[in-house]
Length: 226
Image 1 (tube, rainbow, N blue to C red):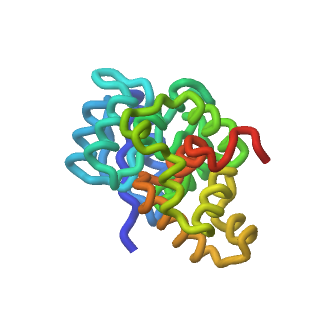
Image 2: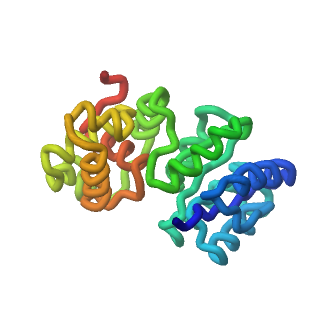
């Protein structure tokens, strides 16, 4: 099995080195490059085509948010995890706008860092279920609509989904894991993964995080609803 290839981008050398050593010590993860600013991060992704980019929000030359926008636009196969010293704030919302697949606090525990990289590489959302509704619900409420979305409302796009795919989307938006969705629908995890893949493909979405955002935008779920 090919290792998960990672680029670590942070302007603090100790942070880069520390994260790099933790990740490189894993048998299934390989750190292929480091970057000290956003511009270097974009170039590293172009040169190495990693599976995951760990990207600090605040960096010189080009900040992490702009770097995330460029990477997500040019390299949709690379999943971006934003690193921040803040919890839920505008930086997190901006990171999701940019196309990031999740975020980690810089004081993340070693095991959580490794688990987060593996999760995002496998297509999972890097947002704890306990904060998914609060974070994504507020994000969706604040997100401005585009002309394209105005011409084709997200709710109409839901009509492309089967009834079971819509159920899967709603449960995903409520913060359930694949295992929890499988238990709720009384199907296998493999079936849930198939449903999630179909949802992403039919709606043209980047990953699970943005499927959750879409569910709120389209009214499939409502922030604060159980």
